[in-house]
Length: 156
Length: 258
Image 1: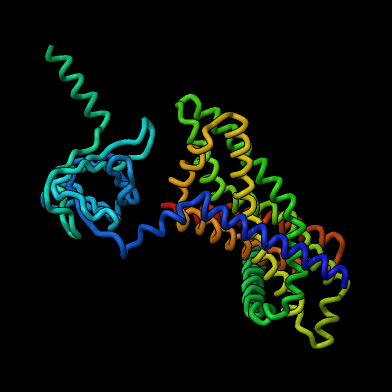
Image 2 (image 1 turned 180 degrees about the vertical axis):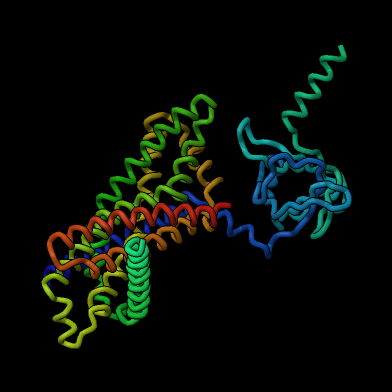
């Protein structure tokens, strides 16, 4: 009987610290808390056409002024214009973004991930579900930059 | 010529029959799990032996693995001026690979081998046959509670391994190497995803638990009822389940993170 009680105590302790560890994982380590605010239901979908997306991936963040306002859902290639079509889920808390805002693909830091930065425009109308961001700037590709630089050098 | 063909045939039959026995044993075991779940007291006891007694080794190992990861990562990242990423590196490598895998390897060595030895000894002292003679099903009474305990223990241990590793990495990076506290956690939160990394880590450790449980119990039942047979079965458990865990880990990683 004494031994059973002791075992129960230790098993209970193990379960408790595992629960604590899982809680720690959810709240402190993973994005569990932030995810709750960005579900399918309270987001609206816009698309943007880019000539070059560089290394942009699904789930990359979409930010305005450094604040995350959405995420990339998926990326396709338009079969007629051969442009990359990026589908973005925008958080519906940010519903009043001018329709003529421009999107550009930026890199966080030297080695960081690529993300989409949105610059607000001045239009009265705002982006809605299904609207297309027309003003876009493609990703900077290092090889192209170096190429341009070399062309400029040789012109002189 | 004929003798060689006979040998190939005999080996093939031995191999398939051991596979068939393993498969049959697994089916019987899985079938007995639901009813054995009701015997809470019995699998709780086994959870103590398999889980609680492995707690110390798993947590200490996790702590040190996390510390080493942080130290090595820092040394490389410092040349890119990106030392804040060290937390992200430590937590992702622990959650995705090292947590489930190293915890499973330690568990196979610590608890899997003990299970095999226990069952092998039960078999060699004819306790299993005695149960059958009394009309009690050893699969329900002996194997299923142990299997349940393994299934519960390893995911818990793997989770604790990862958390201890992240804490160890934190201790080395933030107070030790003066990485910024806020940036350390912010980088981790920005990169670790609950449903991709944490859930997949749990799925991995559950798959490993099934593997180790089946291998350990099957080896125990199959053991020759001699001292040498039991020792060989115990070794087999550790070797087979470690190899299976590493192989399955590759398959799971390819499926999950592609």
